[in-house]
Amino acid sequence: MKIAVISDIHSNLEGLVAVLKHLAQEKPDELHCLGDIVGYGANPRECLHTVQALYGVEGAEPPAQTAGLVAKLSPAQGVVLAGNHDWAASGKLDSDWFNYSARQAAMWTAEQLSGEELDYLSNLPLIHKQEDIYLVHSSPIRPEDFPYIMTYYGAREAVEVAQGRMLFVGHSHIVAIFLFGAPALGREPTQTPLHIPRSAQAVVNVGSVGQPRDGDPRSAYATYDTDSGELTVHRVEYDINRAAEKIRRAGLPVELAERLFLGF
Image (cartoon, rainbow, N blue to C red):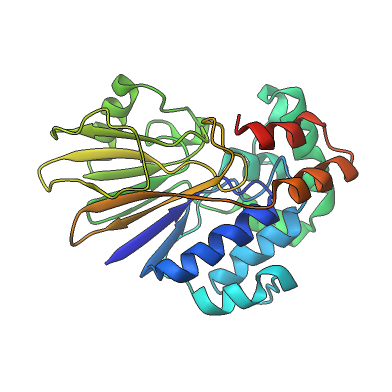
């Protein structure tokens, strides 16, 4: 079975469209979304409606840009989880600890969405576990506090708490693969499939659809074949100019547009 995992769309419709086109070619059996559908970008409603339509939420109407792709991919088998920006926009999480740009974007996003749409975001779950696969936006350790997994030690602690063989996360927007019990430890993530032995455990940060921060401005997501053990990180080009211009026109902090070009 092939599963696909996306995360951190962040209201970037152009990035989402590009990734959905790529997914339509990959044809995964399951598609999981690790949260942060909204925040930062200028198309929160369009991205939210696209995700909702993918997962068969009644009444969700995707925009013209994604309607055809949704038809190819839905109803997606998988889960949608909560990210910190989803909860901040809906008022479930205090955004005071956000930096200025993130806080401004969260407040602006809340103004763009209806009460029903905000309720959907506030009611998204934090974690999902199926067999030996564990899914969470940030970490299985106090997921409601949204900590980051950035180091080998942090990944080791997280995989022990998750008690699963494969732990998929997002949140940092930085693609990373931490392997335990396998000789490929420390390998740089590439688009070449990485075989993960049955005896090994892995923490996989799938990166970000809408705001990569690992120096590569292309959208990122991952696929994993549960039968072969092959993990692939995909990088997909999208129309950054259009996404950035929308952010500027919306009056959001200009740095949110500029960083898209740098992948940082």
